[in-house]
Each structure stands twice: as C-alpha cells, then as structure tokens.
Length: 90
Image (cartoon, rainbow, N blue to C red; front, side, top):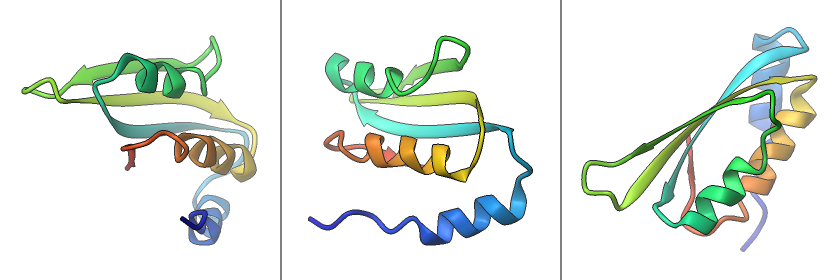
C-alpha cells in the first residue's frame, strides 16, 4: 500500500491557518483499546482529547485539540495515525 499524499492538505494548512495554531484532529477507530491508545499517544499532555463510542460500540470517535507549530507537525500526526489499521481520518 502506498503512503497517502498530503500535498493538498499542506496547501490548505498553509493557506487557511496562521502558525502556531490550535488544530483539531478527528479520527474514527475500531473500539480496540490498543488502537485507541496508539492514537492518544500522538498527542501531548497539554492536548484536549475526547473519546466518544458509537451507539453500537463498534467504533470510537477521537477528537483532539492541540497547538501545532506548523503544517509539518499536523501532517506528521496524520502519517503516524495512518499506521493504525482501520482508522478513518476526518
């Protein structure tokens, strides 16, 4: 599987944000404690991370707000998150 192309995201981040900036990440992952922990570990102690299980409990929505220094930092989080099997990045 090839790595995702983040060039369009980079352009949008450079155009729409001034850096550093508070950035909101949103992921949906299968409700597996290891997968959830991997995503949570991508964010620092100063981040706000909220978990919301789906009504059937099969998936968990993860919303994280963190101050990011630049677009490269945002893309790095998405690249690491993409390694988690079954993840959906919104």
